[in-house]
Image (cartoon, rainbow, N blue to C red):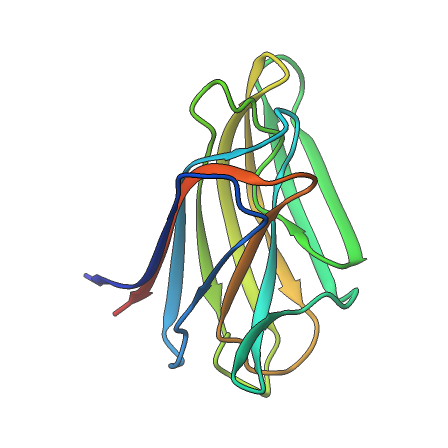
Length: 171
């Protein structure tokens, strides 16, 4: 059975525009957790971008190379199959009602250290928004073969007001 080794963590306690977690330096699978992530606006999603080292600085990749698909699970209506291609980021959570403990998620990162493969992210997240519980389960591929050293989280608008973001290596 595998173990988790903490690589990086960031606890947000005052508004910030983004959270970057780096330290991916091997071909292992990595995992990220977010707990209690709340954007400043109660109807925002937490979005994700991969980062790569540019002149010694982890830099979020903003090119339109994110393809994603997920199952949108809603408490009040039928589930929805959702997808998009050639986007500049991917969805990490659904809309969050920040008065109700924020959003939570687990994300697995594959091929991030491999410069000859695409990087993949699996997504499992839950939120409470628009008066209902919501979940997302799916995945993303960043369609550029290059090495990535981390992930960058940001809200669709405004700031992230709170939450704990942690990167682990799965060994």
